[in-house]
Amino acid sequence: MNNYDEVISYLIEKSSTMEFDGLPIIVTKITEILEDKKKSNNDENPYDLWNNLKDNYQFLDNSQYTIIKISELNQPKCFQVIHAINWLIIQLSSWKSTSDLSLVNLDIILNVSFFIDYEGRLWKSLSQSENSLSEYLSNHIVEELSCIGSEFSANEGDDVPIHEQESLERFLSAIKNKNWVEIEQLWGRFNTRPLLKVKYIQMLLILMHLDKNALVKVFQKCIDIPILTHFMFTLKTETSFYVSTKTKNEYVEFCAVCTSLTNLNGRKALNKIENSYLLDIFKNVSNEEGRFSSWMEIFNKYPLRYPHIQEALGKMLAITTNEKIISIYIDSISLTSSTPDGSRLVVSECLETFSKHASLDRKKLLWQVAYKRWIEWNFGEEDTHNSLFNLAFSELDFAVVGYYLDCITEDERLILQNEIIGKLESLTNYWHNSSSDVSTFWYRHLSLYQPIEHAIQVYSKGGPLIMTKCSYIPLQFNDDKYIEMLIRG
Image (cartoon, rainbow, N blue to C red):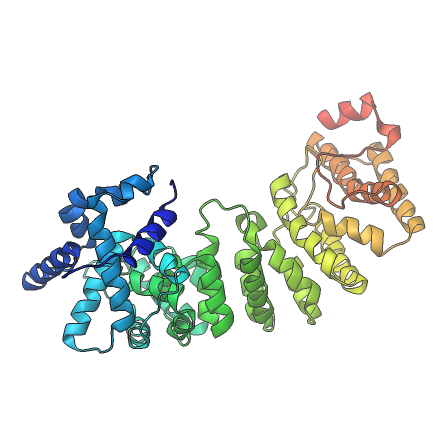
């Protein structure tokens, strides 16, 4: 056995087949520690529990990183953990009041569960073994989590620099006015505040695995960005997105997506369920052009930063009834003439998904909007400091090829192709102020040639719309040493 989930599941199964007398030792020890903390007016430090008890329960920590055999789990040292799990299951289903004694007992429950597994796999295993959660306990957790709030003051301390006070005032104003772009920009300056207490983390994990409907109630009216962000860091991406779709709370949607996308720990893609929830979120956000524009500025200006949204975004673009959303999407992408394949491929993933789900008319609309922007941009022509010394591509290549295939005829493609070739042939007919101007003129038009030639190749031979690991040059310029000498200066 080399999976900690399996270890926990095995211990839970054993707890239902054994009889126990009295309280587990771990419960007694934790109770004593909490009482000492209360007498000394010290805040609880859950890691003190581990330091006090780890000698007898080291196998729990070891089992997260090493192979644990069944025979090891049958040894006496596991008995107290099995006893503690049995006690937890009973407490979860029987907790019935908010008396002082019950609240103390709840603290013990949460600390015991943290000690056994701080990542929530205990609650996950309990959900799979059909263990129930007391309705009273569920309601109390909802009430307590709903009351959590953050407090920020622009006047904290006597020596707070004026620029920090101004930033905080801007941040609080952005939250109030739903200025999502500014919230995203400023939150990084304030997210080093203390994280959630362990008891709140455990409460979230309990609801995430044992009562999702109750979890939705926690988020229903919350607009506290700092608290929401810390909540979302605790929850799984799937659960964060699920809560967002159920509440349709703008603050919850924003924090769920923003936090989850920065906390994927190297995952290459979202799973099917996560993509489905994210699609629902995008559909809801796209109902408001202003909010969608802000989201695109945050999540789509530099597509390579958020590759995980592309499938859901592509599906939303295919089914939205608001044509302005198409323009907002295209205009949000920052175009660069030195785009690496990574960025182009990310946008192409979105547009390929869009192409699979959109009608021909909808595809033509997006291709036309993208082509218009691409032509106007013309590889940064308006920027006089933007010289080209190599072949350039762009994030919109997929859409531009789509335009050439779906929006114009074969004859029109040939006319455009010949016009670009004519420009390349006229290189020496113009006066250029510098060698860099010569290079820029040549590579700008050769770069314009790439998608039209690729579209012609796809039309005649088939293949994907995205250009990867391929480039084209008109036959008459193959091995042209004179042109090569000119553009190299």
